[in-house]
Structure formats: structure tokens, C-alpha cells
Image (cartoon, rainbow, N blue to C red; front, side):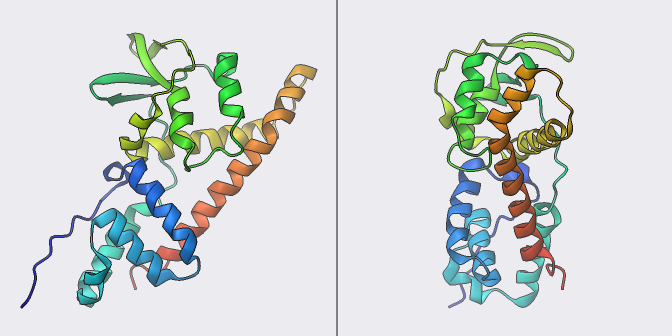
Length: 219
């Protein structure tokens, strides 16, 4: 008996939640170097296709799915989205990182890395806060109080998360290449440089993984 299966293939990072992406990353670590296994994991986590049905896919269907995933999975130019909505509440990205509250800076600095991992939703909860006033592109957000409601960011799509991550990565490059003048600035850079350097490694690992899996997606 032939069983019909409906497959929902995401067409952009906007179709993938942070929760799904983290679950995928955790499993991929166990299959580094095994492209077929990683592809199977992606079909399961991103398309909802049970592994037992993968071998039953036609070659054309298999290649089509890989091609559709590869069409956006290598996109590394996602912009920072300053405004997002969660449960009908509008949130704004920290409008001035140089004037970020000490508590916010301290809470971000306690993490060893800044990357898409179990701590990322907590970092996003610090960087994005409810908008209290907005006029055009000018806006104010709720003062940072240390409140933890980071679980809501698990349902936010990955285009938002990667936009923020790439923004921080570009900021890292700017900071590391800048000539800092004051002793205070130099001390600040020394304290966050290890985090930023690890973040750079994380970005490179992400790009290498994407290239390895989808370099032959159209073959």
C-alpha cells in the first residue's frame, strides 16, 4: 500500500523558529562529516519528514527539497530587524549599544559565547525590549530591569535571530579593527574581546557547515 506524505519545505529563515534550529544543531553535532545523515536531520527538523520515509523519496523529490533548502540556507546577508512583534507586542532592538544599561551589558557578558545556542534567546531578551515610544525610525524601549521572559524568543523566526547575530558579528569586526584612544575603551575591549572572537569562530563554523552541506545541492 502506497502512503501519501505531505512535506512542508521552508522557503526562508522566516519559516524556521529558533526552537527548531537549536534542536537541529544539537543533533547535527553527533553526525559531523556525514552529509547524508545531516540532510536527513534537516528534512526531519525543518520539513517534518520522518527519517523512515526518506529512503522512499524519489531522487527528483530528494534533489528538489535539497535545492529549495539550499536556496536560502546559505544566505548570510540577513539585515538587522530593529522592530519585531511577539504576541501583538512590538519590540525594538537596543537603539544605542554604546549607552546600554550596565546591567544589560553585564548580563550579556556573563555568557562565554554569543551565538545561536541555548543562551541565545536570553541574549535576545536583553537586546529586544517592548517599545514605549516611537516616531518614525526614532524609538525608545522599556528600561532594562533584568526580567527574564526569554522563552518567547524561541518562537521567533530565524531571519530575526540571524539578522541580530550578523549585526553583532559586523560590530565585532569594527571593534577589533578600531584604534581605541581612552584607557576605559581599551579595558572594555579587553573584557569583551574573548566573547567577540568566539562569536567570530561560531559564525565561520556556521558558514563552513552551510557550504559543505549545500555545495552540491543542485547536482
